[in-house]
Length: 440
Image 1 (tube, one colour):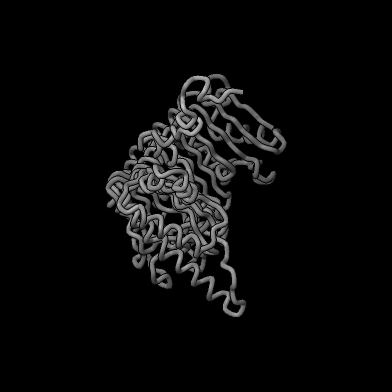
Image 2 (spheres, helix red, strand yellow; image 1 turned 135 degrees about the vertical axis):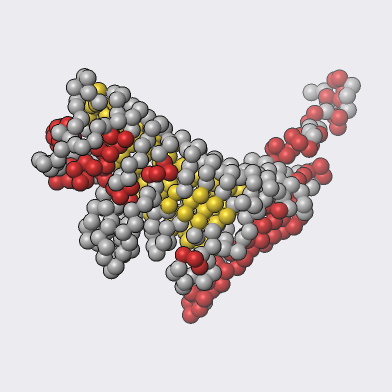
């Protein structure tokens, strides 16, 4: 078979077989190729060709992805990565190595000391990394998830950046250094005033022992499966928030300041110990100084609902033993924009007090969903007080579609409907509830 050079007159060395067309691309396109890669893989491209030797240093993304990292190797890699990048800016930084493996050669006699030392070293380096990517690399998106057997402590990390827009924190701890002081005044706020461009904050599985969370620029706030302090309530001051997800799995539910821009919120109170009266007072007002749930306080000011009253879509889920929502329902709060509402078992207690409250003070409510899959039979069928005579007219004048989801017998909820009707609501075509749908 004739050689290619003999056939078309072109030397074999000049053909496309040995031509590196990828290296001929401009830097911006090469950065697009490298940016989705984990940084440890992006660094390896330096051996492809001379053209690639330094391209990874100016990649627009820093991604420390989850894999079986050991602490010493992670420290060494990230330190050298940031050092060799110098002051090159980046758009995104993902410090998401996950939970680190234990280093080899641990001495069983000093095992706990070595674990604590490892955790302290990780916190020290992580705080330096975060400070570097915020101030030097000037990232717009920062995601942090790295820990040992304990959460990553960021107590001494100043979160300040003029360009940071999205912050995602997972398994992070914010606590005052002198944790033994239980007075709220001893705890400092988590203040994002030095992040004037911050629009989105997500905190997942975090320990939030701070006096307040403050931001005047946030629009999307997610606090999911987080731990709050058990002795006081953290205040959340985010006046421009439009969408919020709040899930409390430990400690006291936070107090929400006014949120006039709020459009939708999903609030879940999953803790069944704190904010639950030990004397079984439905509204958490037993006035017992020894009650850990009520804190010996008779303060009935709104914790959550007052700040949620301007939303159009709400999901309010709570353990039936918690008193936060029932206590807030004692206030005459009008939800004048609320159109879609999701409630669970907590609204069925005390003569359907929570359910009746929203039907009374939600004049434009269109769809109501009751998720009662955890409601016990004896809690589901509640007979209202025969002497109850409604003294106020219901503000609801529109027709509402009610959807009830449950794994129990549907007949129990027909009885519920009949009981609610006795409080002043009608299920006829001309009444308030236009259609009832039972999903079993």
